Length: 85
Image (tube, rainbow, N blue to C red; front, side):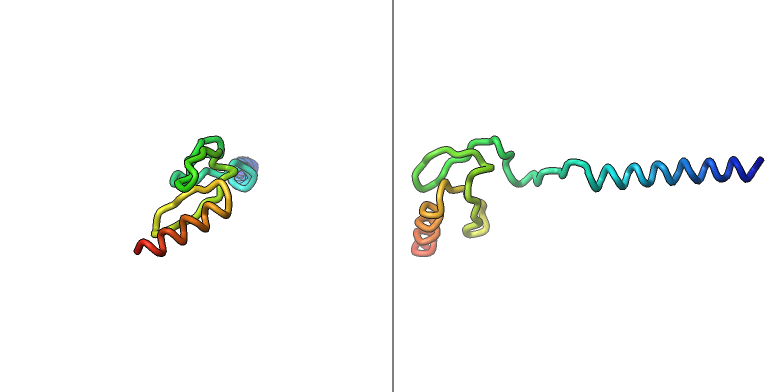
């Protein structure tokens, strides 16, 4: 009788461990709170156009994150910032 109870308890523990592991593996990834959501509109600092953050080109310049509508705008901004400092 005790063997059956011990086996059942171990199986229940195993079930919860496997279920938790599978949820973490297949579950949704938590977004980085430092990054805006993909559907948030961000403004390009060069041409002042608004683009969805998911489509924007993100670049870190001077330790700060900026978002650009194109590689052209990103290049212009980087060259401006490098000439400024």
